[in-house]
Length: 261
Image (tube, rainbow, N blue to C red; front, top):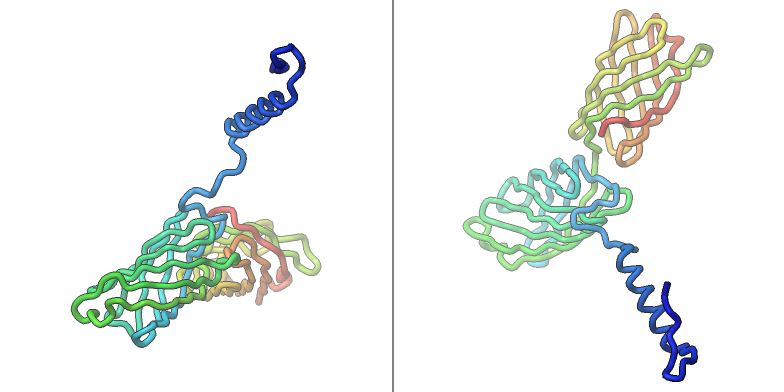
């Protein structure tokens, strides 16, 4: 217990008491932690993995574009870009995403470019500035160049399992486990139908974008089309299952949730 401060005459000293109370409060807050700034590499739960298209607008040379797939693990981001309008045809990306702040290095043969900027809260676009830090050989004319860049994610890259159910019009719900992988616009996987009268395991393949997926497969005398929309990070999916053939009565709509990142 904190003793009450007194003055030399033994009377209560309010000023000393307030000073002591503030000191104790500061010590308590220090020991308890309180607000902590995000650590380097922390990504606020967003993930920019997927296919991207970039435009680099130069302050002195012609602009260039790039397309490729970025992969994010924790806060680390890497990938390879195919370049148009540059002194080389490709380059490698490496850098980090910390909360919404991006920091990259684009390394090409004979040239290195540093990029900084930020990603949108839905993780589907980004923009910032760049600076050429070194340039030799065929890229020598780019030395000292700087400018702005922007990027748009064109497809979410997914390797995951989704679970959910489809509700036919006049039957009990049909459970579905969908294992799907896509890089860019091509997607493939396996759909396992649970408690179905005639559907079991179906290999499916098709296309995927940043917001939608369309897969088709066939088993026995039935064909299955799974058309879905998902959020920007492919965590939730609204799915329509269209079945043709003997199992067509099991067509329906439902929702699915990603369980394996």
